[in-house]
Length: 116
Image (cartoon, rainbow, N blue to C red; front, top):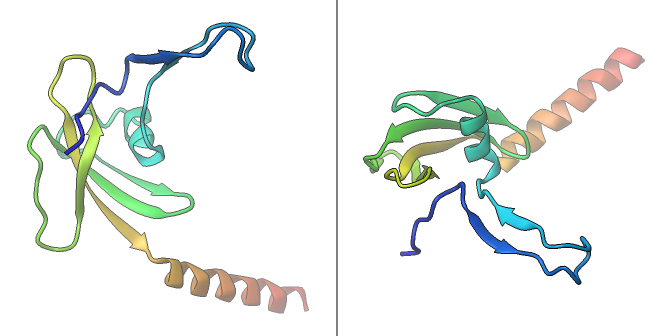
């Protein structure tokens, strides 16, 4: 298993000779759904967030105890801040790509009929 590191520390610095023209610290690592949970201050176990973007997901903060699902939910690290224990979450995809395609097609057909 990979080592879990803090989501909020400095990992590297760019080269002064690089595209930024100076040294820039590279810090902070969160995936888009995890960042949405942090942005909505879902720091406590039981708090949840639904994201709607390239994927539709429901996420539930499970605290520092990873909860293993027997119903097809994915358990991953949500975030790790400073020296605290990693916080985990359960994640379920609400709409599959196939269903999103059906919804998009139906919506497009509906609006085409409305314009006629």
